[in-house]
Length: 353
Image (cartoon, rainbow, N blue to C red):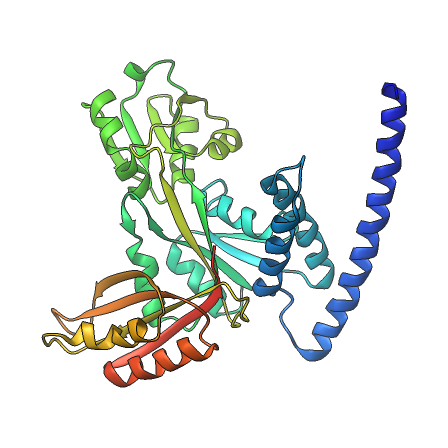
């Protein structure tokens, strides 16, 4: 076969793919109608996780599993939009890492609503101004995002998904060289993730906190003496050149994000459950509370403490475990933990990544 023959074959395949996509879209419309009759949410994290898992296991090449997931993410996003319009709030403005995480989870066929603060994302979901919210919860270099943890204590939203994003920080500036930079701006997490690089390359330059990495890029766009630590997406969106790329201190820098909503996620067989509890300040209390997890063979994947604002020197403990709250082992463990704590709150069960 020559080049024209191969191009003709690709045209035929494209037509078949288009026909199948339209058939899938018709099925999505019917599913959307059924969901509306049953008053069921249009976005089902457990169903999409099952689709991605099945496709990943079936991927035999030459397309990589990652490439297939990228394509199918947009297919699911477009078909979901046919079922029902979806609004997603995220810690903005555009081009923050949270914006990128939201795009990675929901695709481009949703209405994105930037929020000025993480607290505003929770408010948007609680007050039904958005169907879902995306917020950062921890970075593997700088640890927990305390604002997110604090809002989880008081909020009625549920965690219904998680994702991890590799974070590459860049120095954006209209300055022609490093010696033209007089101020470096970024979100506190961005500054902290590049602390070593800044000390080595810009030791005498003032660093200042901004509301977000994207907000810092906006300021760098109008002042050539300002540099922003932000993403390449921010550089493109705000038209600021990348003066130095990959300046994060940890080459394996990543951030975990949570998807929060008002409806629980169903079980997939590969899930995670997040809880928080308060306990008495007595020797051995934490051991006794967590003992059911070990006895029932449930793996604990994360534990974090935050001061309880109501009582000085007392703490709220955040715990992530493997499994879904509706499965017998996790359900039994939660019942026992609830009996051993001052209070227990299940933040949500959701597909694990």
